[in-house]
Length: 278
Figure 1 (cartoon, one colour):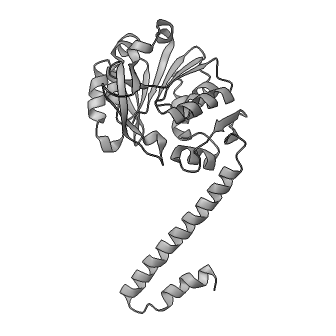
Figure 2 (cartoon, helix red, strand yellow):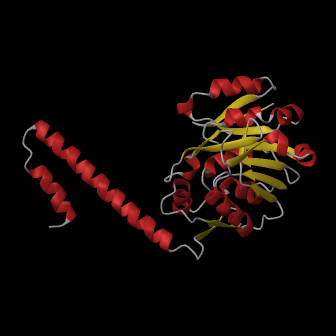
Figure 3 (tube, rainbow, N blue to C red):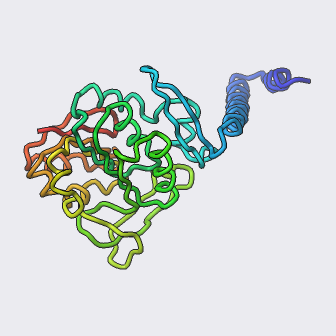
């Protein structure tokens, strides 16, 4: 008996409407399980076809070749999406930001919460900015970020820092680790923490500040702290701010009110993403 016959057989004994509904529900669950198993098998095949070093190469619409090291592609959400789609994670959002013409070849961009460098590579290769400052506290993600910068020939344009960005310069610690979505890992400020943390005002040089046109902030709820530590930057330069604010955190109003003090107004890019500009 094949899979189709087995599944149809589960419906054959149902006589009453309630029995039929229960049988259909059971059938739907079995089909979902089969689809997931098939998807997992296909994904494992894709992982097995990666180049040595778990490298994926893909071409953009304008013919550029992008190389991405994906060492956690078997489990991590972001890396799985990149491998499945063979393009940048959050490609639609990135394209929307690109179309806003916020930067040029002389611009500096800050990528706060850089993960493995997906957005950093887009800023450097697709948007052609002159300099990207990347901040990523997770050692494994930071190592992959550095690899991806090198793979894409951006070593002279991007600088990566293995640290947190927060309200003050000090220390932080891991609050919640997400092994299935490394980008969803949560950190918090802690005086006795082992992770170095810097206020953006303390690490941006005068030269970078003079060219700083965009800051992207994806820090799983710490955006308020990041912005408080960048008051000097916001007051002096007023760069565009691409901020992820999770709906579940319900902090949009607080964030918008704080940035409103500097003259910022917001534009919604997606359910959790906002662009603030003066």
